Image (cartoon, helix red, strand yellow):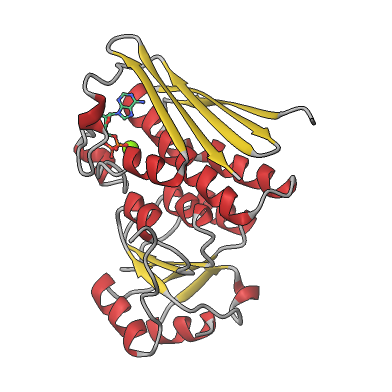
Length: 140
Length: 118
Ligand SMILES: Nc1ncnc2c1ncn2[C@@H]1O[C@H](COP(=O)(O)OP(=O)(O)O)[C@@H](O)[C@H]1O
Ligand SMILES: [Mg+2]
């Protein structure tokens, strides 16, 4: 068994313009190590939505990607406001994003459903006032 | 359809990727909500949008798109062009509005393509 490959990123919560940068880098790195295009698509889209969420809802956080021989795990951890009702947050169209986020092309309440759609497993651990950790897995 | 044909049909200016205008594209999508692009795009190579920021380019990167058309003459900033160049994405700007731009391409044979997750 080869050692897992790990990537770590600090996701800056202060400016929206950098939101998504880490996911673009992950996409490039996965391409370099020869992961198949459809797996890369799933991982990078799911991470992109999660990264955007950390920026718009939680003032940034930490992103880790762990590549193993048959799966990729994405861990997005923030110390933001947390999610009070995870089932509600998972519904398509549910969003607490302010209007200015919508004018930037996000905030349609499709992020968490997209993340679930593109991954084989998704777990949200969240406590109000403490933060949120989203763990997603793509198998191949 | 060649990207050069899109340039012609939309009266567009090529602001990035002049060397890739002979590439073929087979379908397009017009959208301002990036999460919708991420949810439903399957193999659409062209994104027409009225939005002009870095996340549009990153969204196109995620979906392996070849060309972005900014409608209503939105002028991309240098950081947008730099990312597009690094990512091999052609950037066009067209004076046409979204509805018209999409209509012109569609009636000239550029299809909407299939939808993912349907
Ligand atoms: N990391 C997070 N921290 C706090 N709240 C979050 C986080 N991610 C998502 N949420 C909450 O879940 C809702 C739904 O998220 P999502 O489906 O991505 O839609 P959107 O980001 O468009 O609002 C958000 O509006 C927000 O209230
Ligand atoms: Mg979101």
